[in-house]
Amino acid sequence: MQPVRDPPESARLKALADLNILDTTAEKVFDDIVDAAALALDAKIALVSLVDANRQWFKARCGLDASETGRDIAFCSHAIEQSEPFIILNAACDPRFADNPLVTGPPYIRFYAGAPLITPSGHAVGTLCVIDDEPRFGVSAREASLLTAFANLVMERLMARLSQSYAA
Image (tube, rainbow, N blue to C red; front, side, top):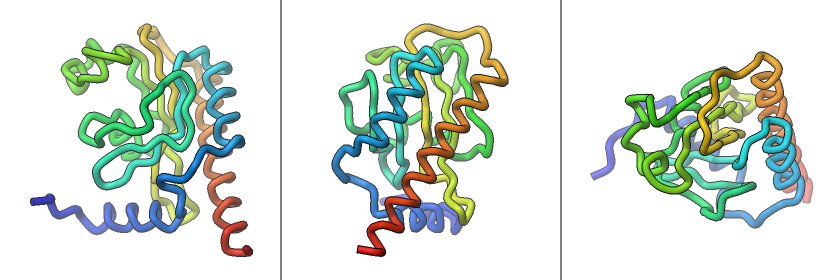
């Protein structure tokens, strides 16, 4: 039996569904953004992650072969509850994540930084995140700003894509 989600979650899921993006094929613009984010933030992995009711699905990925993971183990599930970047410097030392299979096994997440993808209606539908298997000692204001800028760019492209599909 599925838990009953509160109304804000159902509105968030509707906003995600309205984007008509889940399970679509790769698109160069999103692939380019994650490549740039990984390079700019010196991370081995970067993702455009969209969080539905049961999973996080990757619209674009750099440095990771998986196309999705369960929402129950997704760092991005925490990030979408924030309005600012959600940052974990060393997941192995964080009691919320130390036993997570993504920390104890491949890809051995230590560092995670995810900025929410927020729709114009204010719903966080996913994240632009960077991940590394090495812990960090901090994140500069510049790095946090870069992460947010990449997330905003992803959201702009998602909205443009939606506008194009309505025009077609």
